[in-house]
Length: 294
Image (cartoon, rainbow, N blue to C red; front, side, top):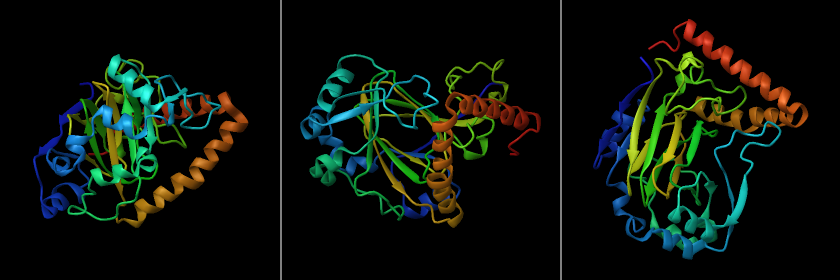
């Protein structure tokens, strides 16, 4: 059977009413083709433009190696001047990427280049939204966002391959306890079902983004992303109106994160070994029980 992937819904444009009924209310992903075509960024945001705006800033870089159990989450692998990094990803494939970077804070003129989609929903969070840059072949590991926000993720200057999974599949995806990411020992693009049988039958959504495409990713959605070209994205985040989702976000950001960091500092590899074992146990239990129920 394998992992069951359905193509994502794609629309050129959408009204507030359609967006609410078909995607926001049922929490269903969709790609909106024309949303960013109304932005100045659609024409302006080339690699050279971004390099000129923030080229001298030193940025942390991340690779696809497995996380160090003793290091805090999001510990970087290297550092480089932003302009040098842009040159690198234009020149050759690399697994180095930048995430949770806010060049807009460094270059406020970028604020004029995009428009929050307030015609579709409210609750947007960031004055300085995060941007993400990756070289051809670089991969963002399977995870969901800790703050449980809705995300409008718009891509520029290339293509990106994305796999999405509803939050209900977290145990079958081998979620690491007290974390928002999955066991890093399998390749979700080409899984080994003998070693990781719980992945067999998991249902997801597949999408490909091109320049100017916007992915609406509802709260709690697990996502894996692969840069098919050296390129970049911006994420505009908005709160879900549900108080239960807000409470989940607060728990993740405070209690869970602080507990996890404390355990990492004090127990290091022993704690990580326990977490990986527990992730496998939970996945096998969910598979045995036929969870999640459709």
